[in-house]
Amino acid sequence: MTTVEICVSDVPTALVAEAAGADRLELCADLGQGGTTPSLGTVGVALRTLRRVGVRVMVRPRGGDFRVSEIEEQVMLADIEAIRGLPNPHGLEVGVVVGAVTAAGGLDLGVLRRLIEAAGPLPVTVHKAFDEVGDQLRAIEELIDLGADAVLTSGGAPTALAGAPRIAALRQRAGDRLRVIAGGGIRSHNVRQVLAETGAREVHLRAPVRRDGREATDGTEVRRVVEATRARAEQLRDVVGGAGLHPVDQSAEA
Image (tube, rainbow, N blue to C red):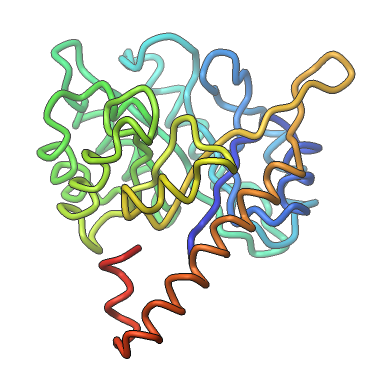
């Protein structure tokens, strides 16, 4: 089964995405800047009102580049501590999303190590700052060593389709040690092609629509993406069954 993660900017859009069938949400503020840390109030109300989806909270104190100063790191550590302390009455799977790179174009391993340690039991996704790293295959090994749970990437390309060969290589390198989430330009009309060319088992996207002069989440588009991924999963099951293959062989096709 493919996991569909939708990036949302507030509680109303989160509720729309959940109702449309999303499996997980990335909760951010200021999507115009690529996503920053949402308010604690937003996160707290989301955890009270959502019922089943996983939630990943963006921890990024500002827009712009992905270099993290000492003060910004302190802010991020404080935000992670605060998120960990929020009530989670419905037992949702809650995690955080972080990223940090150096001026030389590598992962900032010191900052990432401290952020991941601060997250404790919360799963940590490294966001698309990863796409600024030159040697991504080496960086995958570094993230595994740090204990990250997942990485979001377009394979260093403008879109997941353009970066499909790299995403496939990253998935092969990571194996079951790190989840590789494909993201970048994914929509209902191309999600099946992305899955076929990358082998990804998880996809990340926004489904924006303008309503009342502001950006909202298009529940219809989310539903179409979910339906497209489910249809492909059923097609693969039919292929596997028809060929008499054991279900584990499906991973080579996914």
